[in-house]
Length: 557
Image 1 (cartoon, helix red, strand yellow):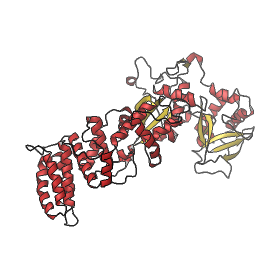
Image 2 (cartoon, helix red, strand yellow; image 1 turned 60 degrees about the horizontal axis):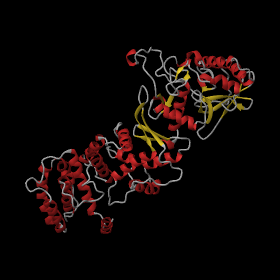
Image 3 (tube, rainbow, N blue to C red; image 1 turned 90 degrees about the vertical axis):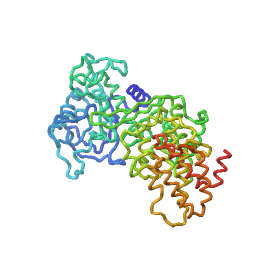
Image 4 (tube, one colour; image 1 turned 30 degrees about the vertical axis):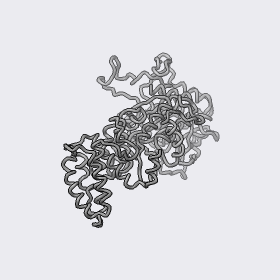
């Protein structure tokens, strides 16, 4: 399903024919009819190179016999300028084999160039990257690429794999094609040498399918399909509009059809909200939550939408998950996730909608998403777009950070709220703001702890070296029965020194009245009840700092 989707995407949007690809080239080797190197011309461009349509790199290079593999018409200095004699000889054999029957002047000039041996370089040419830079031929003022190489050279390259007697049925296209032993590599962030195969297989018999031999291809996939899926996947990974980094993983997404930029843009807005697209989300999200699809120009809500999560690996690229659904259903799932995260904050937050990068950051000590658990990013995104349960790893990581003394900010509280809604179907305590009518014991205990903390903070004893939040919160959250009696005794001393004791004592009495008289403080709280405790604490703390006007507006709404 993954390969078929990528091949279809290539067929819908391809600007390059099979066997060709866009490659970055730094220099042009200017040669004459006799194959003599006249000059080396820098191609320039924004990054010191120019993107040209050239023969694709159909085979990778690795191991001690890497010199046996050369690339056609474009390669590095070892193959094109002879810094490595074996590699230069490999390139000579390739070009002589493919161009021997081509009578055009440019083809004969290339053959003569390699027959002359490694060329002498111009004295003025001495760049730092002379061996690793990519070179292409230029003859009679024209670079020998897809546009100007001529039909004869183009035909020689495109038909080099044509062996009808060895063709088999391709499992992707359903047509007969040459089955490749090795597939083209994919450029993915985090893999060794920046490129790795998506499909490959070890040669050991124990890892192969029944009846196959060590030299059999890893899968019965034709050359055209291999080129199509690797070319399209590399194009998606090279376009910022079609992929996002999630910790160590990479999320790739695309909509069906040739004209799908609008759907992909809306997906990037909703998946990773920023200040720049909040106004657009204010139109899209509320409408979807009301059960309607917004009428937006150039958006087809019924179009198939594909989401692929890739992870770097030593042997081959790992596929974390592949999700296919209609675009409208995908955005609806994301909107539901955003709604789960909605929680009131008395502070002025920079972002109205919480992006996944902030969620991952809250699970780390230093607040850096790159330090998050390597499996968490993919698990989180999969739960968002599929509507499945949030990963327990996320909830446990947030509880761990809070127990370690981390600030209970809006993002942490929102994560706990969303987790309780989706994983425990909680509705009573997972309101946007304080629920004064809730009698849920863990929630009430969390509110009570907030009241006791504010009572301590209101004392006239000056600055405090350590508050009850610093000393007792972790214990009160997990084992309230052993902590709250002590906190209530301390509160009497704090009330004697506070100018606002009446207000807090009244609220403390109301909350104690919501607890059971026989067993007001349970010995332990389960993990989900600890989440309810934290939500109660957060709601009550925010309520203390909420302006009266905001409370009235909330009640009217």
